[in-house]
Length: 80
Image (cartoon, rainbow, N blue to C red; front, side, top):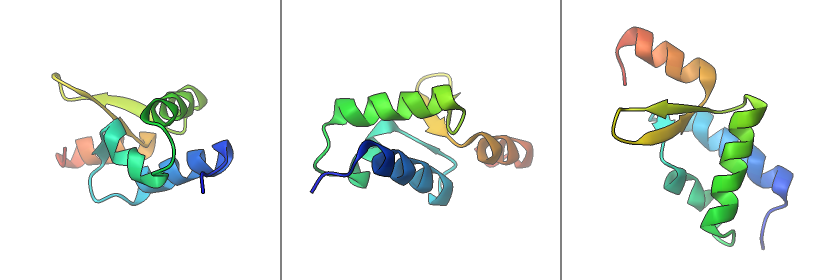
């Protein structure tokens, strides 16, 4: 059964906060709802960036998603 938009957004944020890695690829969020199409997941992740709940993080060669406070803390500690 597919999750509602709000449930899926909450699952994406929860995965970003609880993941051992501070920054995640969009494909890492696909497991939040296996029934959702990848494009839907990407659009919701981008919407969460616009809402300020996630942010883009770039390694220089690829763009990833992270929670704003977590990625800043990791950069200060040299963890990324």
